Length: 415
Image (cartoon, rainbow, N blue to C red; front, side, top):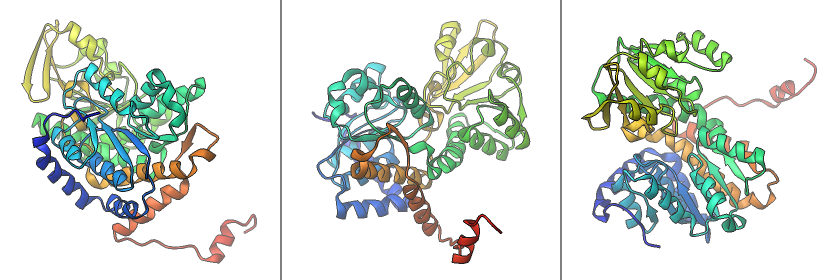
């Protein structure tokens, strides 16, 4: 099947972006060189649905260097970069991705990469896994396994596993220490504010920022907002996380109370209707709303569009919704992932760790997939620690090593 991209003539721009990533991703660069020699994916087809920008592209090229036949699409209609997609096609990969797809086009692209009969699936949010179970059940027996990048995708996988409907092993990449400690916290924290700042060109210092959800992504978002000089309010459903937010120096209150005073709102929960019609009604004129969770349902965009009396495009990626009560609320990136719809996603050095985990987890599935008894597995500790040791070396840092006596002491019942 032929690739479906915007324009192959955009490839030179995409190649420059990928080269910048290559220079700043030493882990992936090392794996690329190792895979090129050992060919762990020789003869295997990999279907990948991840936000299609330069860092993802370099992951694809790393897997391809290992012998994989790559079939690539995006995981969000607004995060695909057309020049990067073109660059991958010029490198010989099959790509089905366009920036700004309709829902129908997006789903057709998912179908296109699944129809080849993949052996490995690399997913971001669960769309590949969901569709292969819904529409391509006959292809499931040839799937060795897959890797899931996100919290949202893992929630969907866990639901399938509870129902007994998950047809092959999936690695919970997001649960790896070298993924969520850094990607979710530092990556999300920086890239969310990168997206907000470059899109709005407004000051954050002195403003009230409401962060919905205090998981690792929420922690990073709140931490960076505080660093920019904002007063931060956290909304939560988990009392433990709420206490943690208080002890980290943030205020905590229900969303409907925070809605009355917030200037910026960032949802980072993985749930739907976190900001709903009741919240819209009490917000200040000019409040700015954005989402950093996977799907565009955390802000109830469907209802906001229904009740708006007028909409206006203020800047690229900013739409104002005028409400019957008179105030106008501004939504960034159509309520989709603000760090990718309005910026370039997480920094290269962060995704270097996350995508190294992805690549090594895929290699683990090739080597051990037939032995796995469980359908949902965590990243093996040896893979996690391999990435940690490599990263520490690239940072030029050294750590202490236990002596035999210390190991004996720590493993002894007596002191």
